[in-house]
Image: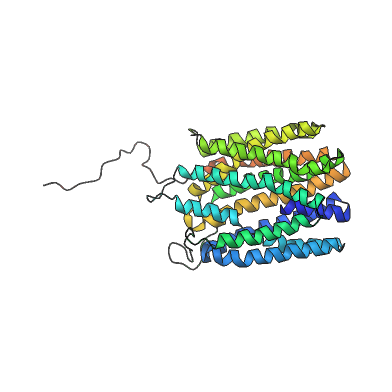
Amino acid sequence: MLTISLVLLVEHTTGSYAQAGAAAAVTGVAMALCAPRAGRLADRHGQRAVLVPGVALHALSVCALVVLALAHAPAWALLATAVPAGATVPQIGPMVRSRWAVALSDPAGGGTPLMQTAAAFESVTDEFTFVVGPILATALCTGLHPAAGLIAEAALTLAGGWLFAAQHGTLPPPHGTDEGGGRHRASALSAPGLRALVAAFVGIGAVFGGMQVSVTAVTQEAGHPGLSGLVYGTFAAGNMLAGVAYGALPWRHSPRRRLLTAYGALTLACVPLWAADALPLVGGLVLVVGLCIAPALITGYTLVEALVPASARTEAFTWLTGGVALGQAAAVTAAGLLADGVGAHAAFFVPLTGTAAAFAMIAMLREHLLPQSSPVPGVGVIGHRQAVMVD
């Protein structure tokens, strides 16, 4: 709800999609930069210690944004206030996934097939909020008050964040030091595979951000601004349906191959968006794009378990969330500029450009997406069984 509510409020008070996109972009960049730090602190000191004060600061920052926007404050004031609003976005999604990874961990130290199902379940519940959230935010902003969407986001985040923090039974143990007892622990980003995944998630963020601005601009150009939440909800519904199917089906191919296949399909699905002129056709095409999002997201989250040690998993998940936020921030800015300067449909080039660039990047880094395996005997060396005692 945060990004689309902010876009709708700032566009209402300024009349500019570019300024609205810039405010949303600053929020996304601040989140992308601060989310990994919040995840690292949660790994080290525990989730509750980070979450409880974080949601309170976020609610206060969002309320300050509302006051400034309604007072027609200058652009620099809005952008400055958007920084703490984004920086304090609570990383509940990565924290939930970290709890799943602990709850489903294999005592022998390996991965578990249930983690893919858990990742799919999380994707489905996430996408349910992406279905309901934009529709609710649009309805509140257009039917009640332009600031109602942001106020509801702040209230829901505060209540939900504190309720989640109160769940003590599933809290992962804090890792104050590294496994060797040292004072400092290496960042999760030191894993080459995670860096490849971050590139993939930046492209996914470009789809989310580009869709939000593009769909809003297209529906307003067509004279039906109230349908923006419904059309964007169609995109999220496709994501949710694909998540259900992906989690239920057994897969024979490796996660790396599934990620490359899903990402290639996502890039192709973004190609015809700019040419769609009727709203029903736009809705059908964004549904197809949504169907391609979930497999890439779920596979990426599943790979984290194999590529990153347990002591840095929350941080790893926040790097992926931050990658989405960074891609979203760049996309809403570019899409806003294209919508204002060229036309609403031109903004659909942003998801295509973002996914194509990210697909090329993960194809080059695909060797890093293989889990680290234990050493094996070299070629031509015969392995022997371990000696046993006999009498």
